[in-house]
Length: 239
Image 1 (spheres, rainbow, N blue to C red):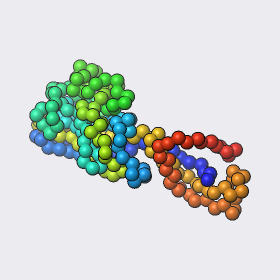
Image 2: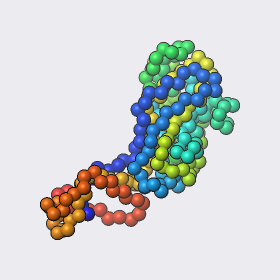
Image 3: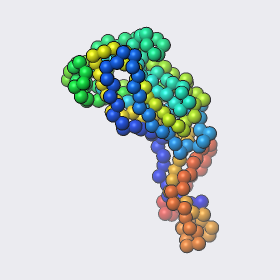
Image 4: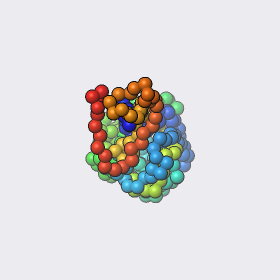
């Protein structure tokens, strides 16, 4: 079987803008659907998840708890900056900003977001709750530095056993009044080497001339799923 394919890169993203208004124990969420992986694809090890990144701003990190939820409801805390709250533990980050927000009583509109990434495989620092001192000067105050990749405040191992296909959610609980913020987008980056999906025009090269002939009608946009294993790949004279 031959074909020219576009490779799935493992990145799933929501570009929905989610407002995080003032709240006292109020939860806000956004979601997207992961699909196209083998029906049996399951989260077996933290190495499956390269990173979770959130582009956001908020004018008081000490308000917030933030976590991801996989399709069967298992969760991993990303940010745990309030105690006691929904998530166990927690260590207040005080008045540190996320991004470059509009620092008012709330309702002043979105500020400028920074992208914060969390990984158990490629993190450069430990959890945010242990790195509030890693900050930069923003226009309106002091913000958590977005240039480092942080370890999540929980462990991605808490997602083991979860199906990869289905609805993934990000949830934020705001625990104090006055300050607000926005999530501009967020993404889950599943390691593409574990479950790679390609699609293209596939044909059965009956006469082995490495070309699609009239007697070998191809099938356009046919999904081809490559599951973990040992494979050898090569191209023909057409590339």
